[in-house]
Length: 168
Image 1 (cartoon, rainbow, N blue to C red):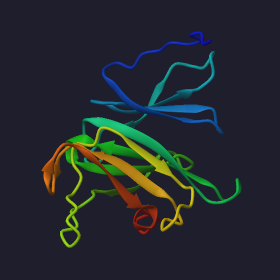
Image 2 (image 1 turned 90 degrees about the vertical axis):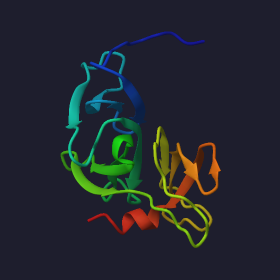
Image 3 (image 1 turned 180 degrees about the vertical axis):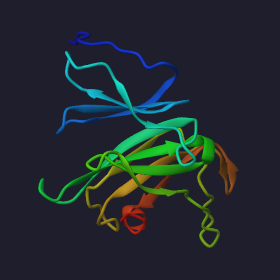
């Protein structure tokens, strides 16, 4: 059983969203504008834009996810990972440091193992949970154009250690 407790809109086409349950926040990507934030409570304030399009975050803004870096609350750092479909790249913003841009990157091909680069990402998921061979977790992204071999879209897994190396 479910019932609607709140409804709101963004000015244009919303895409991905992610909830931060620990902090009671909802982050939403607006395809042609940037990232919005609102309280995740039924009586929360209207959404407000926290990150605008830039030379790093290019329309279409698509997938969003949160990576919680650090083992305990005192050292934890929340990172918002966003796919920038218009530039086939990704941006990471520090949610605990006024949405400061922490890193930007793309996922290139690895010709030695026959894996193509990533383009046209619609969605992503990120986890800080240690997994076999991935002690810091993973970023999983949808690859809209699979070129090696030429085939329908697929998903790519990125070892978070490679992303961690880009972060301050």
